[in-house]
Every structure is written in structure tokens, then in C-alpha cells.
Image (cartoon, rainbow, N blue to C red; front, top):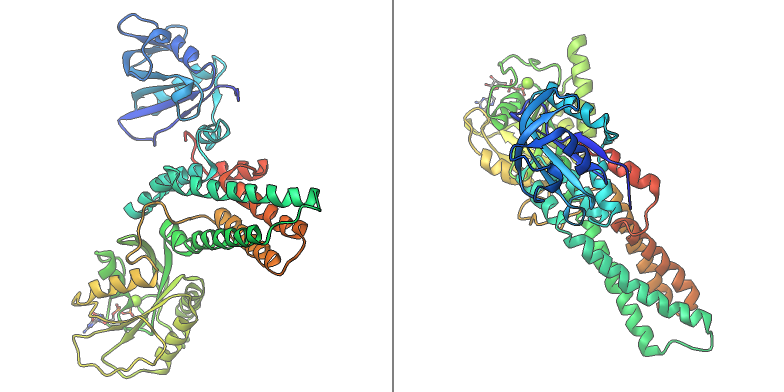
Length: 453
Ligand code: GDP
Ligand code: MG
């Protein structure tokens, strides 16, 4: 496809070097008008894929920078179009003046994700790979980056495209039978088809099941630290954060507002929320704090229920444990193990860890429990996990449709009934890989990218 020529600053402000990318049929031509290689050769004739040193100036001769530039020819570029890149000094003034000079030559500002969108439209990337690019840029942990990089290499995308192709072949067969009703499907063939449908449903479902963990890998987990006053919640936050983030005193009710801190534990990015201790109080400020704590617990993906192990359980502790049991994930932390133990945690909590937050004892055990509870312990981060809701929804639809087709074929429904379900599965897998996906969905996907990518 032929598009107009776009440009954007691809680097974050404040660096020593700033990169401007230009893509489209006039990209190289436009850059050649403002960039003049030091060796006297026109930029148009410089060898592709080779950095060239030269002078950047506006068309009326104002010198902007001494910099490097490179050109790429359409068949071997990210976007699938001719591209040029300028590596300038990172001054925001120089970068914006250079963009203006390009705009004066008919180039326009690229929208968010427009380079990657062109890569997709020009067949350089599948939709799943394009989404992996955004994941890779946003990755907060090495493991999340590893998974995104694996997806970018196209492993899942091509696997799903293969599965879809198998279904297309199957559908052709059913279609033939629908068109020529006298041609019955042989019982043996029917058995093979049911087998294919069942295997496909299983494979698609397996990939769908990776979403829960994949989402946590990509987004991290909001984690509320809950407990009655003085059990050591703030001390625990500080211990996990590695510095004194929250105020710790022996006075109950010290923490009133919620304090957030992002903590990385291996592959897991926890958004820890230290909260006011749960108790009945007449203090109006603390009261609001307690309400916020309850709300945080409701919205958390994981609750860390902190109990003071040196005292018998109180009603407030039971309230905390109840909140924890209502959360999708909970780890019970029995704190103050440096003192004699007085507590017995009731049944029903798979993750109970004894620690001393103050003495920094047992924190490794706690981190292991957190990773296990989040489903990230022992996982492989090579691109096998899907990480976004759009993909998950399409996979679930495809898996359900395959299962229904399998059942319909099994109980001997007419070929056209089976066909309908197979077609639904094909359409869902096509949406997943981008083979048939609506224009508005594509726009929505790329809008979430940053400008310059
Ligand atoms: P919060 O109200 O739950 O946030 O509790 P804090 O973190 O403010 O701690 C309350 C008191 O318990 C402070 O005096 C802490 O020093 C003390 N504390 C916290 N963790 C421990 C621990 O592991 N052992 C002991 N002995 N004291 C602790
Ligand atoms: Mg506190």
C-alpha cells in the first residue's frame, strides 16, 4: 500500500541523542533536501543501511546540527516503505525545528503507533506481533520483555495462523458436502474431523488459559497490605520496598492515607498499597483511611493479610482474614516472629508465611509465596503467554466455537450446522492474527502506542 510520508521523534526527551524517523514514498527525498553528507555525495546516492555523517540545515541555509543519517529501502524496513532516520543531538529545539523543516517539504507528523500500523498493513508484522511491540516498550520486568520479544518473533502468531488454516481446509470439506448433499462424509473422515476439532479447541483453550498469568506479567498486580493497627504493615512495605517509604511508630493509627510503592519481585511487578489499620474509630481522618483500606482490598488483585503473631487473634484480625479470603489471591503474613508465637491461622489459606518485618527475617520465603500465588513461579517467559484482553476474547470465542462444532459433529448434526461453528472459529482466529479484523479495532489498537513507534 502507498501512504503519505510521516515523521516523528522516536526518542524520549532529555537524551544526548534524539532520533527522528521518517517513513513513506518521499522519506528519503525529503531528508536529502535538508541533510548534506560531509563526503559531498547526495543522501539519495548514499549506500542504504549505512550511517552517514553530515550537516543538517533548513532549506534557506540555517544550520541546525552536525549529525548522522541513514536511509533504508522499502523492501527491508520496519514499515515496509522507504525510510530515513536522523540521529541528532538531543536538543528539543533542534528536534522540533528539524521536524518543521520536514513538514515544510510535505511530510506530516506521525500519529501514535502509525509506523507499526503501516508495518501491519504492509504485511511486515501480524497483529499479535504488532501488539507485542507495544508490550515490549512498556515492559516493566525482564520477564515481561522476554515474553513480548518472543511474541514479536511470531511464534504464537504463526502457530495460530496454521490452526486457522487447518479449520479452513475442514470448512471447505463441509462446504462441499453442503453443496452436494448426495456426497456423504465417510464415517472414518468424520471421525478424523471430530478429532481435529477437538485438538484445535484444546490448543486454543490452552493459549487462552495463559492469559491470567500473562496479564499479571504485563500489568503487575495491585496488592493491598491489610491488617489491624500496629501489626507491622508499614514496616513490611518498607522491607519490601528496600527503603523507609512509610512512617513506622508504635502508635496505633499512624498510617491514615494510602501509600503506594511499586516493587519488583522477579517477574512480578507489585503495586503495594500500605493502608490504615482496620479498626472502629471515631477519628474522622482515620475513618476515611479505613474506608479506603477496605476499598483497596476489594480492588486488589492480591491481599497481603498481616497478622501480629505474638498476640492471639482478635475480631479485627478475623475481619482482615475474611477480606483476604474474598480476594482472588491472598497471602497471610504472620509477622513479629522474633517474639514468641501466640497465633493460629484458621484453615483455608494456602499461603501462610511467618516473618519478622522489623528484623527482615523470612522475606525471601514471602517473595517466593507471592510469586507462586501470582502464578509466575517456574513460568517460562519465551512468548508463550498472551497478555491482552482482545486476544484472550478472540481465543475464547474460537475455542468455544470449535468445541460446539465438535459436539455438533459428534451427535450427527447436519454438515451446515457444523460448518457454521467452524466458520465462527475461523473468523475469531482471523481477528486474533489480523487476517480479518475490523478497521475500528485496528485503529483502537494502534492508538494505544506511543508516537514514533
Ligand atoms: P502498622 O500500623 O501495621 O503499619 O505497623 P507499623 O509498621 O507502624 O509497626 C507498628 C509497631 O510494630 C512498630 O513499633 C514496629 O517497630 C513494630 N514492628 C513491626 N514489625 C515488627 C516485627 O517484625 N517484630 C517486632 N518485634 N516489632 C515489629
Ligand atoms: Mg502503618
